[in-house]
Image 1 (spheres, rainbow, N blue to C red):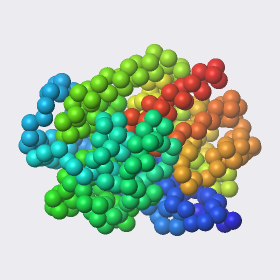
Image 2 (cartoon, rainbow, N blue to C red):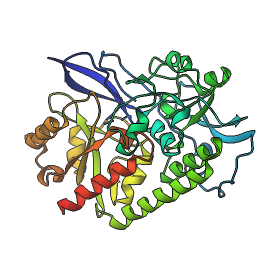
Image 3 (cartoon, rainbow, N blue to C red):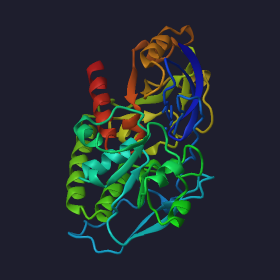
Length: 370
């Protein structure tokens, strides 16, 4: 066995951690961060552009829209997003569809699962970035999808699958070994793009509803999209009604190596933050940029610590054990109250409906701890 340090991305920000493996395995993105984009088990560093969206292209700002039509009339033009693949600024960019896409590549597991929920399994010709537990409800359908890469897929792999649409996480639309190519570059090849607004900074839960509504229009499955949005809104209402956290603060943490605690601000992960807020959880570092020291963590003293579990990552049980035993952390309320909770990477950084699965599980655990 061999210990290796690697850089991964959670919430599209770089984190460093350590893992032990038997053979070269593909590892991940994220804490994108904890968790978001990541590093493969062969030691390559994965970097993804930050997915900040300007106010003019705010995912949340476009959430309100009329009820979907009974039938899509093509050509259909929707407003989506683009950047140059080198910076963090996302701007509105229209995508016009002459017909419903027939061959789709999903650049993350969460994006593919969302398409399956809308009855579009047969449209998916490739998926990549399988970094967390999948949704058991769509497991059998998911098995039908060709896996381009367990890790992030390159533009060469994506284009080679012959898609007429590439959709998924914004930070992966870049010209890099971990990127599927820029929006502009793919469009120049005649390939349409759909950047999930949930993956952009400024996103809220309404951004998920907007994504689903637009996908319903693009694929002419508005009825399914509308029904699913209603279902998700009911789940959101139940989370809010339960408010299991009761006004607690939290911080994302990870194993920085040898059981040393590392902190990730999660300031760009507004989508996850909005969902966690339904439960009464507030990110202690939502307005913080840059690195956060252990001393800052101790001074802030959040009530709850969240650590991401992802494929190829460290043994989080061992990490949590090390955190609880660390003499320098004993003043933390989360240590004293045994309030470190595991969250699944795909659920919280898949930018899709599965965040409800993760949030409901966390809510149950918080309620049980009262």
